[in-house]
Image 1: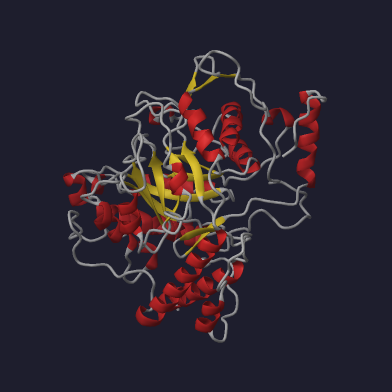
Image 2: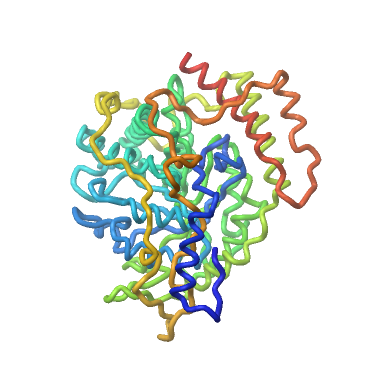
Length: 509
C-alpha cells in the first residue's frame, strides 16, 4: 500500500503506486483446507473470512449481458469501498459463465480479496428446483456449473464454490432435495479433481433452521466409499443476533456447541440481523475471538448494496454514485477494532485437530464420518442419484479459462463519487490500493498457477514425507507456546497433510 501525501498530486501518487506492482514479490496464495480450518496454502497460517455478501441489483441483475464481475468500472468503485471496510473475502451468488471476468478478478486479487462463488443463477437451466430436483439435475445444468468452475478455477483468489444456497428450507424441500445437493457436491468435486489446475473447496450454504441444522450438516458431511461426497466447508446463514445481544443471549454459544465436532470449516455465509436499525454488528467482536475461532472461520455480512429487503451497507444512486449508509460506518468501526488473533490459542486448536484426525485414521481409517441410514427431518431414502455428468467430467467443458491480466493505472481509479448520508463527500482514497502482485514476466517465478495435470489432485497440494513417529511429532507441536507472536503453523499442518495422505491413499490406491 502506498501512503497518501498531502504534498503530492493524486495522479502522481497513483502512478508511483502503480509502478510498485512490478517490485512486489508477493502473489495470491490459494486457500486450502486442513481439518476444520481454512489455511493459506503457502504460509500455512489460518485464514478467517472477514467479508460481505455482494450481489448489486439482486439476483435479477444477472443477465445475458452483465453480472457482478463483468463491469470493471463498477468493480473498481466497489473494491475501493471493500478496502475501506478492511475485508478479505466477498461472496457472489450468481454469475454468467459466458461473460469475461478477468479484469474484475484481477482487481480483487490486487486488492487482496478472495471470492466465495455460488454456482447457480436465476437464469433458465442454471439452478436446482428444490421441490422437483430431478427435473433440473440434467446435462444442461451441470454443463453451466462446470463452466463456472472451470473458468474460476484459474484465479488463485477463488476461495471456494457453493453448490447450493438454502435449497432445503421447508418440509417439502427437505423431503426430496438433500440427496441431490450431495450429488452436486460429488460431481463438482470430481470435475475439479480431473479438470481443474488446483483443488478448490466445494461447500453448501444452509438456512439456520433448527429443524434441519444438524441433520443436514451431518448428512452433507458424511461419506461412505467416496470422499468426494463430503462437503469441504459448511456455510450457515444466521440472523439470530439482533440488536443488543451477547454470546449467550443470542444463542451463538449453542451454534458453537452444535458445530464443535464438524470435521470441515464452518463459517457464517450470511449474518447481520436487521430487526434493529442501524445495525451495530456487535457480533463481530465475538466472532473473531476465542469464543468462536476454534469452530467458526469468520463470516460474511449480508449485504453490500441496499436492496428491497433493507440489508444494505451502501445505496447505489441512479448515476452510479454511492451513498454510504450508517450500517457501513458501524461495520467498519467493528472491523477496525477486532481484537488481534490469539495465535497461541489457534495454534493449540490446530494441534488438537491434527491429533484428532490422526486418531480417527488409526481407529476408523477416515476422519470423515460414515453416513447413517436416517437423519431427523430430512428424507434421504432415495439415495444419491447416479451422476449424469460423467461424460462432461471426462471430456471437460468448452469455456475460456480465467486468467489475471495487466491492469492500466486508470482501471484502479473510479469516476464515481462517495457521499455520506448528510450529502457531504465521504473521505476515502479514490483508488484501489495495490496489495498483491498478480502478474509478472513470463520467465519469472513462481507462476501464479500450474496447468491442469488431469491427475488426482486431492485435498493437499504439497505432501511431505511421513515422519517416523507421527504421534510423537504431533505431541511435540507448539506445546506450551505462550508467545504473543504467530508461531510456525507449517509444522502443525504437515501432520494434518500426512493424515490426509493416508486417507486418500486408502480410498484410491
